Length: 283
Ligand code: DO4
Ligand code: MG
Image 1 (cartoon, rainbow, N blue to C red):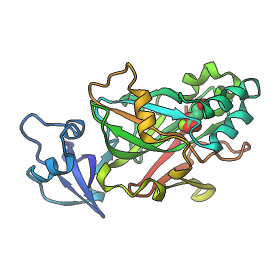
Image 2 (image 1 turned 120 degrees about the vertical axis):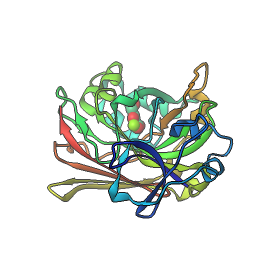
Image 3 (image 1 turned 135 degrees about the vertical axis):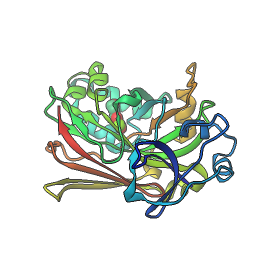
């Protein structure tokens, strides 16, 4: 089952089941009002099945919102060999940091976004005004409830300013966290509806003036860490009363001469979920 957060033509916000080309809004009752509250159920799919459903609508009649409520968004870094190589190239002074973190037990985990910095499908993502080298990072994103149970998956775009992070690793929060820095969506696929890990491909296309200027892909089986390992480290002395999302790192990095431009469109497709598409704007 896929669950989306939508805005209806009336302006009302609802949670809906997504099917091919259609959405079925849910009639939320009994104190459960949000998508993240549904994800707290022992079995979110069964919980949704038992709710009253509204009439099914064409998906083109609604606006898809980022499928997030109050959750913090975190991210893992250097979980794919491709990311380790790219980081070492961009950061001459600190190359060994990235080599060591790829091999260490403790992963790189960083705070990525609060919900107001997140863009849903179709909403803009930003190039920082003070950066000249920017890329999208297509990342399978884990959706956890407040007990850090892995309840679903969505698509994340960990927008990154490579010149800022490459200049000094201590600048990482500025390279990663700013307004419109994170794409999340278009919806959440519940965990029991995802393909096995080795069958999850991640595909990135960047279009400029309608034509592809970069295409790349990877597979989640290239990731050096398990989902359970990343969640375990995230939860060490760290609580998430409304749940959390965790981007799991990028395995696709464009060549070093590539930078995003305003009006580019970034499409990230992940098997079992769908496609997250965002236009790029200049800060
Ligand atoms: O170490 C810097 C961040 C790396 C990252 O975001 C990634 O590998 O996806
Ligand atoms: Mg990343």
